[in-house]
Image (cartoon, rainbow, N blue to C red; front, side, top):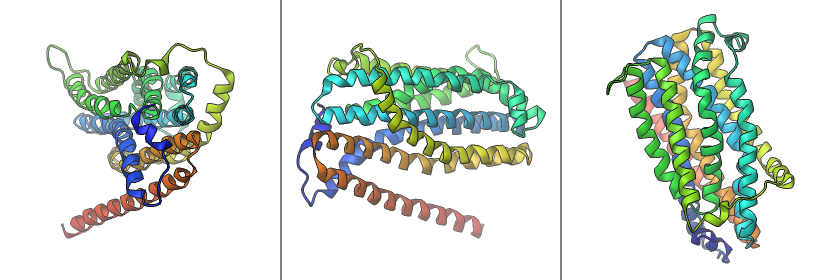
Length: 353
C-alpha cells in the first residue's frame, strides 16, 4: 500500500486535525489541478474564439459547456472506482483492485457511447432546445468535431482522475493536466490563426485542439499508470464482473445525479441566455467560465474526502470516518470566506470605477 494510504490505517489522536487537514489537501490539490485544468481549457477556448467575433464565441463556448457538463456527469458515475479501490487497499485486499479497475474501464466505455451519440445529434436537436437556426447549426458543427474527445475525456481523464488518487498516484494529475493546458493554449492559437506552415481553421480549429489535447493527456496518464512497476499489479488484466459494475453504479449514480443538477444549471442558463442574442450569450459564457472555478475546488476536496474515508473504512479506523467530514467542513468554510472576500473586493473596485 502507498505510504499516504498506509497512514490512514494508524490510529488518529484527538489532536490530529491539522494532520488530517494536510493529508486531505495533499490528495485534493492534484485533483483540483485536474478539474481546474479542464475548466482552463474551456476558458482558453472562449478567450481565443473571442477574436473571431460574437458568433464564433457563442457557438464555441456553448458547445464546450455541453461537453464539459456531460464529462462531469459521467466522471461522477466513476466515483465508485476510486472509493472501492481505496476501500480494498485499506482492508489489505490489493488483489481485488485490478478487477475494480477493469470494471471501471468497461463502465466508462459503455457510458461514453451515449455522450458521443448526443454530441453527434443534428442541428434540429439544438433548435428544439430553443436556439436560433444559425446558432444551432454552428453548435452542431462544433460538437461533431468535439465528440472525438469523448473517449479520452471519459475513459482516459475520467477514469484516471478517480483511480490514481485512490492508489496514491495523484501527483501524476498535478503535472500531466496542467501541462495539457499549456499544450492546449498553443494548439488552439495555432489551429485557429494558423502558423508553422498550417492554415488557420477558425472555429473548427479550437475543437480540434481540444480533441488532440485530451487524447495526449489521457494517453500520458494511462502510460504512466501501466508503465509503473510499483503499481502494475493494480492494473493487471482482469475480467470485469457484473457484481462490481452494480457496486460502482450504486455509488456513482447518486453522485452523477448531484453533479447533473449542479452542472446542469450552468448549461441551462447558457441555453436560456442564447435566446437573448449572441452578444449576451458570449458575455454570459465568459462570466460562467470564471464562476465555475468555485465549483471545481469543493468537488476536488470532496473526492479527496471520499478516498480517505473509504480507506479508513476498509482499515477499520472509525475515528477518521468522523474526522475527515469535519476536515472537509473546515476547508470549505475557509474557502467560502476567501471567495466571498475576493468577490467583495472585485465589486467594490468596480463600483469605485
